[in-house]
Length: 114
Length: 229
Image (cartoon, rainbow over all chains, first blue to last red; front, side, top):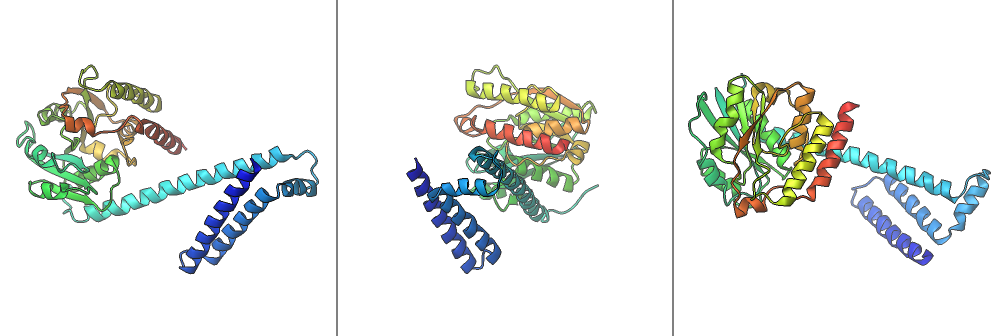
């Protein structure tokens, strides 16, 4: 099971990092965002290859009640929050795009409003 | 009285010209009829076929969905100064003869939104669609507290007041239920009239898939949640 997690993490890290660097080079992405995604995915790959890093982090946090479950729970909450934000943003972009397209095509109609 | 007949069109090149030409030229109580065909980013010859008719062509630069096309058509109707607007599907499943029936309750000032109700007992309507419609009727009722016999019907008539008041944002087929939710919110009077449906092989292939139902429900829930906040 751990070997599958390692392969998947490595694969996605390579894809995301190479894509981020390509986007940065073609000026589609800022340096800050490129650095953010590189750090995030290097961290994910590091945890996949060295799972004991999580135990070490828990030990360093000096909270004996925290366990792996807490860490994953926090991760899940974070992922759900991000999903919600993306959904809301996508919805807004969709509405803005529709308004733009609608205004564009209706601008050709003569206004006869009473 | 000026009536706008709004037809959302997406890849209906095969039937759209015939449909537009079959629309009534005279309706009791109506002085002028304007047909507005909203081409929702079709990739076939729909635009060319519409141009061969007298319909007013409104073109979305991209495909945005049946709901978005209907809203664009209603805004166009408002812009040309229509007193009422009919919406009907571009696949030819609605009988243009029923337009008179839909217009009547508005002309008599009995309603501001008239829904054309398809017979759910028709042997021609696929069973899966009957189940899907019944489920969406229940969901629409749960979200709007307004019972409609055919919440998913695309054959509707709107008074000018309804066109101006309703704020519909849905892009896809969820707009049918959204209209009812909005009508309830804005105290718009709703009436229903029975209509006939022309089930051709072509129209059976068109329309919403049952698998789209989940998507519709999710979007309606999100809409309900965001509107009530």
